[in-house]
Image (tube, rainbow, N blue to C red; front, top):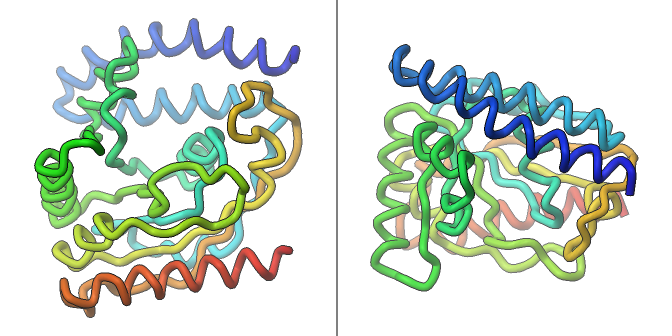
Length: 235
């Protein structure tokens, strides 16, 4: 518990301080780049404090990250921090609206171009996906967990179709990603972080622009099959 306490204490102090420094700078510079740099620095320190080591495979599959959607499996609250730090990308995300209510962090996410979504409101959710598609067309990179939420068992869950619709509309590249080991370090429902190694494997990209709206389920099935096969190799 000492490592977990150290991480929570550090983030509790760092997030407000970094926000107070980064937000004015982002406004003056007209770019959220400084927010990403401060965020990556903070997460890097937090991962060191937690004893989390990340090994990345297949980085060459990422290529030019413009108009790209990174789609990993989702099993732990550590997933997003690990991806943010290890990929070194200033990616955006569609995130549940509750996260934007967190003091300091919520404001930072909005300025950085993250998009809130209300999963209970279909009209708002569709609007969020339209905004994501436009942001992708503008050349941004997105991180989207196609399962929508963490699985309770650690097994790969069903994929939601919304992210694939946005990728098709934007003509994006989808890079499937596989995280292993992260569930053991911070299982769902537990706050404690155990030290250990996480492996991130980036798979060959899929050209979403080659699929039509009516083929969205086939695209989702293709991406899910690749992730499932890579997970089976690790079993």
